[in-house]
Image: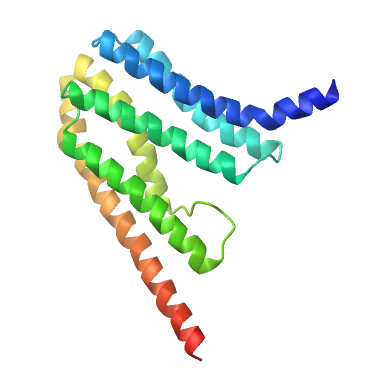
Length: 196
């Protein structure tokens, strides 16, 4: 019985991450079929946020962190964001260009993480920076904020679409510049060390 519990605790974080993928599908299916309904989408949004918090905390608490878990977690986050943005763009709740900003940040994050890890001989799959992490959180809550405000508060919706997403876009550019500069700086530092 103890081995079953140990195995379950070892797999629990990845099962929670998989649940986030399923919830993302349910959320977007529901919005596509019942656009305008708020209660069920809000509950699903909150469950998605909860699973994102819990999977990593449980993995760290039980010492079950893994490269697979890290990649699966980021992939589940990306799946939630991409599918939600596409659905909300299809209803013109979010502008299409903002979907491309989010995709750009995701690709930049993966590429610069790979480069920074390679240049620093790091063990972590992903390399996070404060502004990038904060931007990711904002990308994560935008579908909830845009969907809810579109149906309930035109003032909040106006702020979300005409101010907030531009602030996020600026933060993406700052994070990209910081990460790109670190890649360039580390490359030149390593080249100079190799020359001496």
